[in-house]
Length: 269
Length: 291
Image (cartoon, rainbow over all chains, first blue to last red; front, side, top):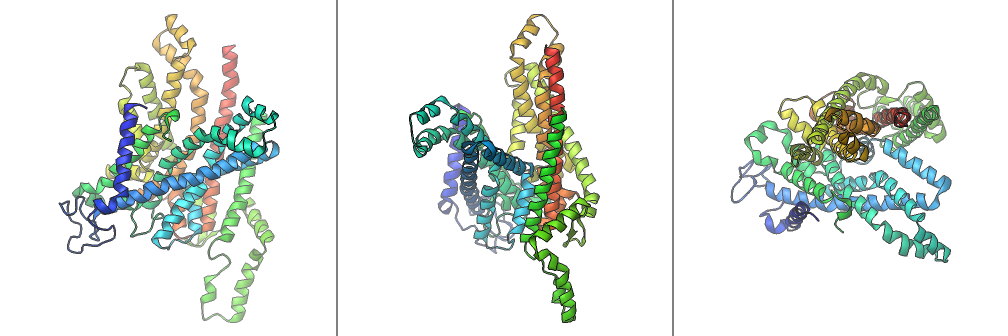
């Protein structure tokens, strides 16, 4: 691993830890309103100031980071699992089944990601509780983001199924279950891990886009998308540049993820 | 070539059919399907209510519903937008040109910028020369399209430049890696050893073999740009189909949203198909030259 990658990984670890210990680091809750300090400037009490409802921006940023950093990997895990089942089955069944599943994947890929996300999101209730909106947002991301990984996993599984060691194992009479658990899955692990890690920044950015469009996580729960909505007030941002803190953090986190993921064979396990 | 063309047409038709059926399913499953708010009007008699229900009766039969939907689709009837109280086809006709114009400017701008910077990086090949473009490309990749649009809006730039900044990092990274790899090929070393000028080596021996792969990127750029058009048009208040899709999502106007999605999918497929055809046309010519 290169030095820049180590630094990026270290930064990501610090951000993740800070968000996990948000309760300790932030002096107040993300929803607590200090009516005597509305739109306050940074101070010792509120290091990033308060928003127009008097809520501590640092607390909201830390809790929002926790939600985005915990749930984007959860959505990535779900999409990778779905992709593994669909892509793996396509390669394993072969023939017409493989053709049909691959055509299905291609059809799914031809639907633009954000348009599809909006269509399915509109199908589900918009006025939901904050917790339900978190679940809906990340389940949607997980359930709709499987197509690209499925294509890669299918290709990887097909290559492995044609590999000499697997043919030899089959010729030796190894059972299908053992072939799958002992020979196929361990060799597929690098591809699955790569797809998982590649999906994480994609889902973080998708949630941010959805949040900015008002279709993401509901208030008062904070998320990066919800926090970025404040930026629409240009004059307020000019007067209070610390409002840019969520953009800077998002840029740094996704940038670090890109640096860490730059070399596929150095993906953290 | 003809076989490829037929395959592309078949693919587009199958997508249109499946997309239409999928869209119809979503519309049918959507909230408020088959319910008419006129029924809530207390002034209406029971007979009038029955007549309104009869209007929607044909939709309760799934097979009939699909048949009517597809027949309408074949005749250009994309349904009716409940939220905007206008036919969907009319809305799309009104807003599509604006989005297509922004997309054309954005894709051309992003691709030109990406290719130009990739070429400059390859020409100089000095350590650190690609630092600034790589950092800008990394920043553009690490920000949501909506934030890029916001930042540009603050600077007074049009939304189409946000599309260019979404497309640019993908083109730049791909083109740079591709051209760098080609530059290290034995045929380029041989051309340089023979004393060919730097410009000739670059355009005839580095860029020309990379054209098919770069053309393939055009199809992907269309898909990327369409995806980015929603947040960008919303933020920059551009009345295109991205903004229309967003409004439809907020109003849960599924007939409108689903038709936009299918239309965008078809346009993406056409762009990808054209890129594939260009690729197929270029490759034999290139092989002939190589022979």
